[in-house]
Length: 70
Image 1 (cartoon, one colour):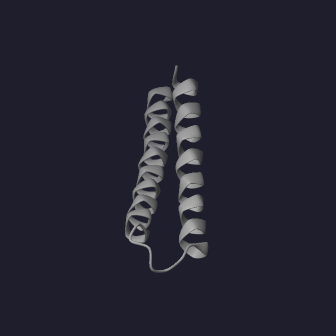
Image 2: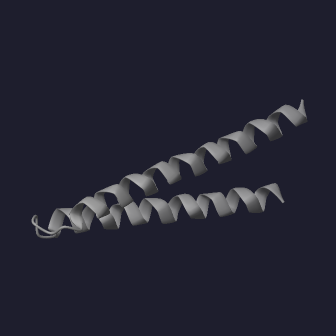
């Protein structure tokens, strides 16, 4: 079960980072005077934080598995 959980977390990290890249491209290439720019910037920050939290989850699983092996 742990391997599947880690695999799902890696997929979620990839999705979050992809969404962040897409949001960054939209901000870079989009018109500067649109009211939705601030919302896209906040969304980009949110998905980056989610990616960090998912990565921390993978690290926590790794540490828990390492401690049980000893």
